[in-house]
Image (cartoon, rainbow, N blue to C red; front, side, top):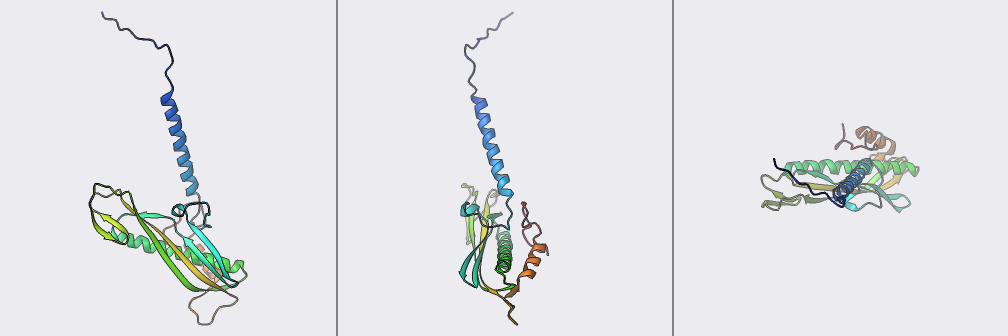
Length: 211
């Protein structure tokens, strides 16, 4: 009958694994907490001056003259699969939402300045596009304005879009007769509060209006 001899440690094992697990858990908790905090922010909210451009979204306004302001809405960076039809659909939907939110904020700003109506004198829109997660082993075969489109198996690749819309708005004490660019501020607010019922809530709102 054989006997096995066990060597007894004179010193306790260093808690390396425990420390690694502990710090990994803390890191994971911090990441999850950061993600939760980011998720809690409503899409229809002021632009955060302390957040980098690529992670930021929301509206801001600048006074141009006594009766003119500029309203800008920066959309959140949104990803879509890299196929032309999907990119176009996502781009149109995000640009429409950014325009709606800028117009919504313009209506609120008009009422805050005691003007019941406003007119949009100029609209500027642009969309930042970039590619994320491309597999370096795959060979590009198309090159569009949206970035590089890659071949079969590129499921890890997304095209990210971030529209920004700026409206130059003139505040009006009354509506212009026959003008198509003049808005009733209260009516605009009512429309978008109905179209985007969760826009002010700390959850992801619908991508496009409900109606």
